[in-house]
Length: 573
Image (tube, rainbow, N blue to C red; front, side, top):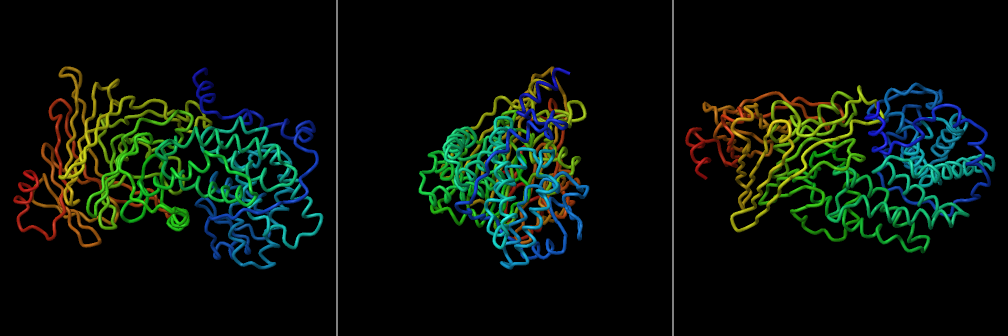
């Protein structure tokens, strides 16, 4: 299957996936990454991720709540238990949960940390998957180094030497495997881990210099000029800063100049955090973004000294922000990311989200907080976004894991090539004229969308147009507006209008010209507890019969007595 092999090559899914057998356990392989161990840690960087004392108590009792699943190991080793999910397994083996054991600051907590680390070394210290998947190794190295005081304080000589020997072996292995890690976040995490190792472990000056160069090159490649990530996933910016900020501090503590790209990347990413925030403080749900970790985001934003107003145009990342009065609109105006980093990319071109007065109104379905395969696939489709779809298909195409195998990770392999973005700001408000050709090759349709918000933020006007040849298609279209679960709909006696009731007391009127409004069921996925049922507004028709649909969202202060009058006022305004 040549196509499958090519996809795996493009994705950068390294050679280690084919080495599930003897090589990992061979003497030659162990010898290659053995040798003299670093004899001491020079310093322990600060992990700025938040810790939870409740989680610490659960770990004392042998309960491991990770990746959306919970397992009670009791007195058994958690590393010998069949994992309930891949997310749980990776979180366990990455040791990020060690941060919770620093909260009690007690010998009991330190003894528990030492016991679990020693347990892993005894069971998985020699090379075998999945413990030695490079991405997991990288996360474990960072966790062990950052939380080494919790692990090593009170340790005896044998425990200390076993820890340093295992840590050194993992660092040497990762150094060899770095070129074969997946592109994007996985490779960045591996390089960050090696930088921590080069700075914090004794006797590794060559690694420190080499990994600093790798970091400089990788940040230059992955962080776009406007501060977005090459994958177009807003959530990765938070994850990256959680590692990059402590790494910058570690360079300073060692009195070694940080790579230029590290400083520049942090300075560029910080404004993008504010760019993606809605009025309620959450991130827009685009391209793999799930629930916003509020405490973590607050921690990261505390390092932002500028506190500047977010800019409105992110042309390299492919997003637009329209902010007026109490209302914020965020729009996906970008082509798909490179295939190798598209594992979480969505088919949501020209989709928008809207929030006002601290309340989200129009949303996308978002990436599931708990990675259930069926929900993940559904969340990536165009129908899961507040935009137009043609013939119930997506504007981008993904690899089928059933055909190409799980190693392809559902790559996005085709989508819009030409995305037009024109932005105008004047005294009347902010106006966007947008288009994409994601449906051109299959249906001869170009989707054009105009969005305008007035200077007070009280009225959002939209116009969707389907450009097509007269004799090519009469495919059906559906323009969707997914609503946040907190929004309540009040139907009216007019098929072209209804009212949206917000928890903050605001009422917004939604009217459409050219299509009737249907209320259908939808789901909101970024909830830790799982999918939440909500509603969506759908405008539908045939491309050739009705290529122009106009719609308006308008804030009103009280319920109108006559909905017909409301409709007329909105249309004329």
